[in-house]
Image (cartoon, rainbow, N blue to C red; front, top):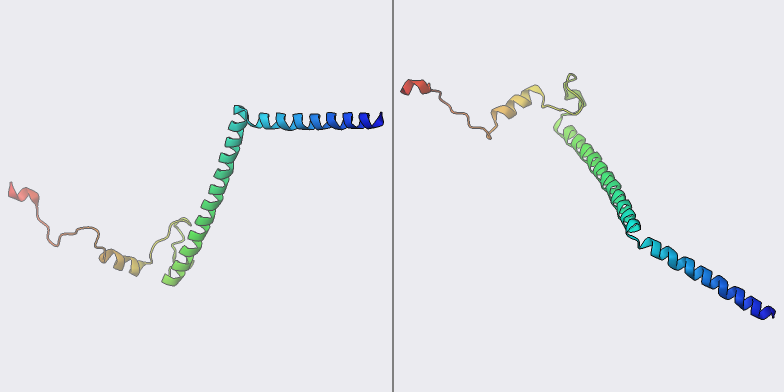
Length: 117
């Protein structure tokens, strides 16, 4: 009799466990649950993307500082009146850079357009 009671209880416990497991899986597959899981994944991906962008920005800043040091454009060469995120070439170098600028066309002669009319 005890043997039958034991197996009856074990079978009932296994049935309850299996029913609970199946119900949990079914709840995970409802449209609302799937939408919530997708939203969570999207938020997680957004956080990872933000962390990546911050790492890239930090690396860019570090590399920019290295290049500025190599070119002699350290923090001491920056005009104190400018904000921290804006840098400019020092005076003589800046003028030399402007004089050697080949991107804009500058005619060597000037004339008055009204002269022809």
